[in-house]
Image (cartoon, rainbow, N blue to C red):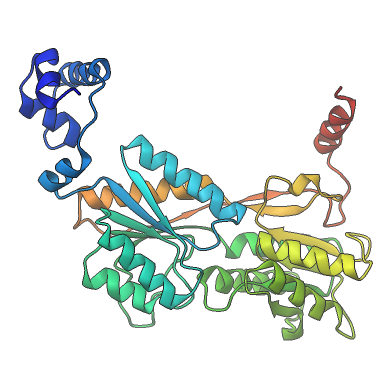
Length: 354
């Protein structure tokens, strides 16, 4: 098995220079770095990660704590995190807090005990214990997707944060439906306490106001960000004496639940009820009709979270940053609009494929 000394002899440099290349502990001339990397490749040298961590106090690992990893949205975020981490030579340890504050605190502690260099966390609806633990142990962390609000008169969050816009895209869904003539627009909202839920409710109310429509609290039901909850919420809205004629669902899981509720009642989209949803997903255009949706930049969120964390590791005292990434409006036909020309052309092409 090749050693660091073998790499040094092959590259014509000192063992210390090889160490600096492997650990990024000192600038090395590009041609020297390349000579070391070529020698590593030629000899098949594998660094001793444990020994390196003892020297550098770094494990080159990142902890990722996100709930509902099976959700396509978070799966795409995970892909972005993993790709960016690997690109910079970091491994990934993953845990699912199950959106439970107590369990969240436990899995974050377990990740910390594994000596990860930093963490990326999608916080629960009550992250007080999480924030206290990370702050007490001075763990470098980035909050992802769900952000921490600043209490009135309180201090700004001490952690970097990255999320997608939530309020304005939801407003756009509501105004789009109102522009089609709908006056009773329901919202299947997410889990109470989450920043995404609050912001999408805010966007919903702004959309109603912009359309000159009154806010009716009976038309807003929480679906707890899950398919079963979305089904219950949609069923409750459909059972109203005067049900909505259009519906906005605030995440992809609740969209699936709402569609089940409609199917069970023999109702069609958009014939009986127009539907717009927050979160686009890979098969949204395969539904009949295709789902009009807000698409979040999920992979980019993961990539940016890693970038913020690595910048924090490199400069622990730099100012805290909060990034918001824009979403895209994906116009299909579940809202009641006719199929767009490009979509119709693509479907015809698919039908003609052998």
